[in-house]
Length: 214
Image 1 (cartoon, rainbow, N blue to C red):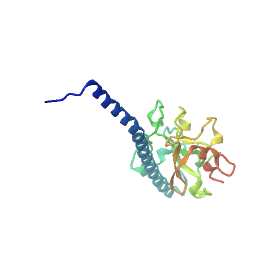
Image 2: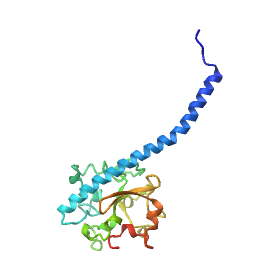
Image 3: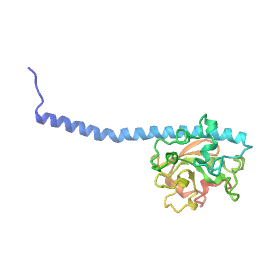
């Protein structure tokens, strides 16, 4: 004889399922974010290889913040696409696109979430000429590329990393990945660093990790 669940038994089963789901969801969410952060880190490594190839061809000069023309809307990414077997219409895709980016610009090409250290120079401004990789005093402590902040609609801020003293944003450093950001350093190693550490800087200088001349 078939036995059917009573209403009470069904409610008990539903409650148990709900409890299990509430226990498992945070773990699943954390695992998913770790996977996305790992993808972002891999993307930055690819960008690092492209930058190294670029500097080899450019007599040691780093990419310009503004890209290969004064009218560039993609900035530094324009100068790297050929080294990534891409074209200038793919600059909003991986490896430039961080899968965890929460940016919501009107133009998709500004939603990538990867940003370039402005201190490496911008050919549009004579006061900030492009710099050579060999000029970096402490490569292991100088940021090249990192995750942008997620709370600005200013593409000039979210496509480049401004040193903390250059911005009026009360929190100039992102926290996209578990309270910090992925960073590609000038010696081309990858590292995650928490937001408070980057905001504090080092040796009493809040701009320390962004500066080429330390």
